[in-house]
Picture 1: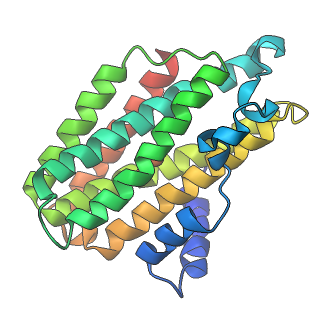
Picture 2 (picture 1 turned 30 degrees about the vertical axis):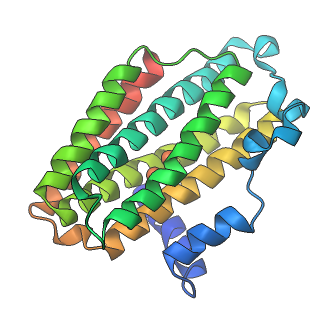
Length: 238
Ligand SMILES: [Fe+2]
Ligand SMILES: [Fe+2]
């Protein structure tokens, strides 16, 4: 997806959020709004065909690969995101202004990862062989940027979430090739769209909390963004 389109999407999300703070939005989203991902955390829905069956064995090779590589890289990405916030919390967790902000984003990432783990099991997708590399890389990135300061930690979040938001959006386009007549497929698309919106919200939070005041912001963004793109391609393949 083109950056300009993502920025338009982002601007639209920003407009929709204009009358409410990000914190209250996150709270509202998780207490009032019915989320697609709730299907995976609500025990009463565990026997629903949309969360308990898969079309993967009946799909043509190309579609099967699309589904498998998507769930492999997404689970790795959510694992790394959890590790980034864990690393940031280890350094900045006691900062009264920043700690709760990072914790809120981390809590959303915990749900993202739990849902991705269930999606992998549902669709019989093996995790990436590089999961430990993703976890340690995320942990190091989170801790090192946090040690550089609050603004650098937010710049890390801004760069990562820009790439991940774009990645999820590209993936939604690729998923148009999957058959819509299996109940798991529309749900999967809705979950991916929900997570994309969460990542864009994290991006907003980072910008609003001075990410662009970080020392060497442009260099940091370039390095972190490029690293994320390489990691995505590796985890798709391995
Ligand atoms: Fe996430
Ligand atoms: Fe995120």
